[in-house]
Image (cartoon, rainbow, N blue to C red; front, side, top):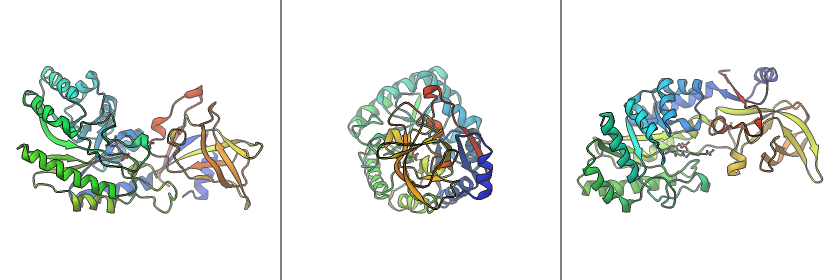
Amino acid sequence: MFDNQLIEKFKTLETPFYYYDLALLHRTLAKVKELAEKYRFHVHYALKANSNDKILKIISSYGLGADCVSGNEVLKALATGFQADHVVFAGVGKSDKEILTALEKDIFCFNCESLQEIQVINELAEKSNKIASIAIRINPNVEANTHQYITTGKEENKFGVNMAELNEILEVLKNSTFIKLVGIHFHIGSQIQDLENFKNLCFRVNEIQEWFTAQNIRLTEINVGGGLGINYHQPDLENIADFDSYFSIFNQYLKVKPSQRIHFELGRSIVAQCGSLISKVLYVKKGTNKQFAILDAGMNVLIRPALYQAYHKIENITSTSSERATYDVVGPICESADFFGKEVSLPITQRGDLIAIRSAGAYGEVMMSDYNLKEQAKSVLLAM
Ligand SMILES: Cc1ncc(COP(=O)(O)O)c(C=O)c1O
Ligand SMILES: N[C@@H](CCCC[NH3+])C(=O)O
């Protein structure tokens, strides 16, 4: 992944920084585009995974739509080249201001997550003199087999509405003259590696579609969300996610009518592998039973290990030692949760070595904070 020329370049840069391999991003997007065209699927990139301007401009240049979860994401998507009529807007807590922004910009569709939200959108659309297209986000109650914090499609999650609420929602929609129901939306969770879960989602969507047909409601847009997982353990072996298998499941198992369009909202699988957090070893400290490699990046720069006990592959990219030792790789923040990996085997590591924390392109830079008033990491984008 990192050749000598790149490592020499890294040595000249101030750490920590997020490095993005743009050549890999382009290859990933070319694959997604090829399959989307093959199956006539509509893929929206989930901005929440990474909203770096340069990355967004590259993604929009492949003709993808945008999946946004705030008014600011909607504005950012438009500013970076996504077309308004390819923007979907989800979120359990859309503020009035955000809804008005999205109405003003004539986005494609609101993914609505409650009866209350539908009522507010109707009122605001009337005031704005617009008709809002909406999809109802339904909890399919399908297992995602992922971390509990990133499971979203179960009845106990705060997202979407449950099937039992649909009759009441349809009643409200009858009187909501400034709303047009165009579709249904699902998202069962993130970092899903067992593709069986998506197959189960298809079966559930088929049942739910039958329910709508029985109510005599015609839907044109079926949005199955995102969630395709990536290989955090072997990023070089599988640097492009298995989009072939993923899309072919939906092609095979989702029953669609000729007038219907299938939408996806992919985040992690598009940007995770092209990003690495590059950090410098400040100190190697010996504890009673272990040694710590203390980096200049902490949980404020990449919070995933602290928040979800997430695994990221850690590499010492400058050590020349052929001997190895075990280190807890930690950050400088005043929290015991501030670690990137425990008992990590690395070549003998010294002050000044550069450490790469891999697969950090998704939910890395976007979740950065200035906790402890530590400096935030910059981003370095190269197509080497
Ligand atoms: C509604 C919705 N759509 C899309 C995504 C993107 O998911 P992922 O990055 O796992 O593809 C998320 C995040 O989980 C989400 O909540
Ligand atoms: N932030 C999470 C993913 C959240 C997905 C958004 N619904 C992660 O780092 O894995």
